[in-house]
Image (cartoon, rainbow, N blue to C red):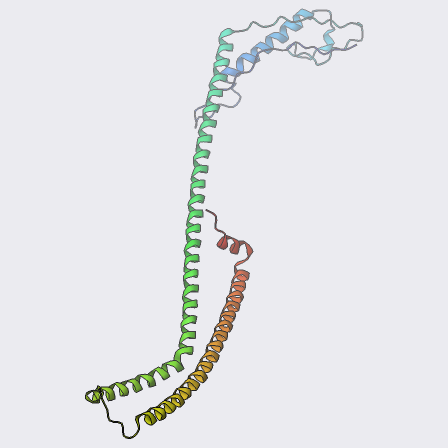
Length: 283
């Protein structure tokens, strides 16, 4: 039966000290910190060889007595002698130095992590502020463009209404010009015959009642003619007003249809998401 010899040095390797930059160590020269574990392991191996003595055949060892084989194989004896080697003494100063070094490394890593975290946090805050400023500028730009669009739409509607009024009132303006000319002529005639108008008493030849009867008949006929003309004119005016209302309604429907077509075209060009942002801005 073969067993592996498990006597090895229990010393813990220390972290290597930082070396100055630009200075290369000589090849084949062990460092100061690596010499202690190496010497301890060599001493433990020599002690194991001396403790075993003649219990194990010398042939099981290699040519160099300082190194032991991994397996203890003996064809003469059935037993393998395993004796525990003496544990090396612990050095409190070394352990303290190792603990201090580990504490220093832990503190350094913690400080490094905190520094990196602070840098990343500052960068993230800067990027967030930039994104917020960009979003605010875009929101202001969209608001300004929406205001300009509404103003242009209002101006367009006002211009269309003015064009409609001009087209409708052009013939009326010609009639008003003729009426103004006639009124000026009438005013001139009245002003010319002003001294003859105020009459209190006048002479009636013949029977006064007959004169009044004839005057009444003529007055009635004149009033009837005037009323007939007024009625015809009123009917014509009513028809004109009705036609004007129908024309206005038709024009309004045409304008509304044009607005709907223009709105649908612009919504298709902008896209559904952009149109939703314009109609329902986020505050």
